Structures are given as C-alpha cells and as structure tokens.
Length: 293
Image 1 (cartoon, rainbow, N blue to C red):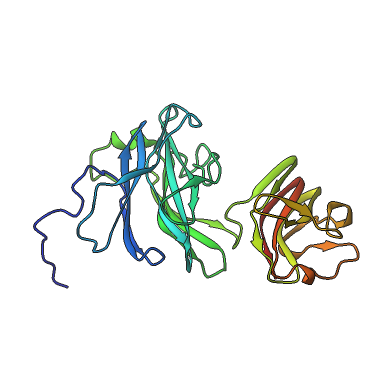
Image 2: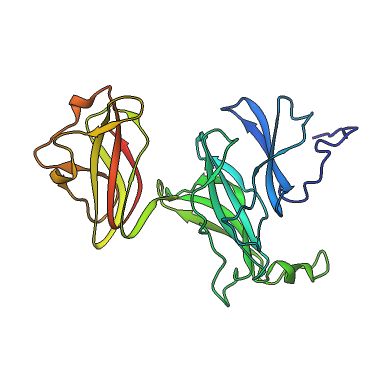
C-alpha cells in the first residue's frame, strides 16, 4: 500500500483515547465515538458523509447523579450485534478513582444517537485479587460470533491498576498484561432479573405468529409467568382471555428458547395482525428475551 499524508487532521479536537470510527449502514453515514469531558470523562459522537470533514462531537452519555462521584466513563467500546447493525452497544470502561480499578458497563441504542445503560452494574468485572486481570480490563471492539457459537469480545486485562501502569516508563511491558475473550451465550448478553419477585411489561409489537417462545433461566424453585395483553387504543391495553396468569403453565429451568404454554391454548392465531404486549411475572428468575414464532 502507498499512503498520502493529508494536509489537515481528521479530528481537530481533544480526544485522547480509544476513538472508534466506522461506516454505519443503517444511517448510511460514517460515525465516530470519542472521549469528551462533561462532569468528568464522557463519551461523544460525531457523524459525517465522507470520513474527511468531521464536525465537533456531541456528548451522548456522561456521568450523572446515578453514578458515584468517583466514576469516569473512560472509553466508549462502540460496536453492534454481529450481523445486525440496527442494535448498537457501548461497552464502556468505567474508571473508579476511589479504587483505581476499571470495569465495563453496557449501554444500548436502536439508532446510535441516544444510548441508555442496560444496568449500572458492570457487565465485565476485573479479576479477583491475585488473578492476572485484577487491575482492570478494556474491551476491544467488535462483538463477534465465536466458532463455538457464543458471543465474544476481546479484552486487554492488566495485573496493575490504572495509575500503577502509568508509573512505569513508557514502552515497558506492563505486569500481567494479557488478552482474552469475554464470552456470553448467544442471545444472553443481558436480561431482566428478579432475585425474589418482580414483573414488567414489554413494548407493543404486531403479532405475526402463533406461538410465544421465551429465553429464560430460573433457580430450582423459581418460575416465569407470561400474560398476553391486546392494545385497545393508543394508550390502553387489556388482558386477553385464555392467556392470563391464571391459565399459565409456569416455566422453570434453563432454556435458550422454550415455547410458553397456557392451559387449554394451543396457539395464538386469533391475535394475528393485532398489537400485543406481554406482561412477565418473575420469581427468582432471569428473562433474556422473547420471540413470536
């Protein structure tokens, strides 16, 4: 390859770590995720049509009162679900000034412009004391499918904390630095969990099948129950007779996709074309997803 130096830099602004730039096929634009500073370190975003002329980035996510005053959003870790660029993620490294450790938190977005945290709990934590990655870790985009069928994302783990690593001379090998895979089962990147009891509604969707399948896991004594609601108007929904909690055959166990059952109900064909939403009731269980088949 031969390269020609551009007369001007691509990014004119101060972005001092882990810039991620790529073509977004859903927006048909180039996008970049960079470091910004607002209430501490934050994550900024910019987009362009030509990958040459970039505007100043806008902050898309920054520390809020929900965070510890000691926390910074250190890197962005932008990627999307393998083969599905409409589902976008930030595997953001969170730097904890009080402990000098770093871990990774997950945010998601349907458009790449507005992100929300899946949870304020880390999705990948530093190793336990004495392990090779007990100082912290940084995930390296992209999220990929591995040969064994799992989801994977490479990460760089360190046996030194953030500031311990900077005490070394530049160019020295950092103690305990290695690369490894963070891995999840397909379809189980994140879920909604109730240690005891809890419930939630899904968003409305158009029903275009005959069965509901759920991806869930329970303890030995846990359960998942599902109730189907039909949209009445723009704001209101009502339970559908025959597929309420009273007719449930509760799910218990651990299954990636399992058909959910109601007593005396073989299919949901009568709801074809209608807007529905599901009401889940959990007891010592975690739901990773559902689908209409």
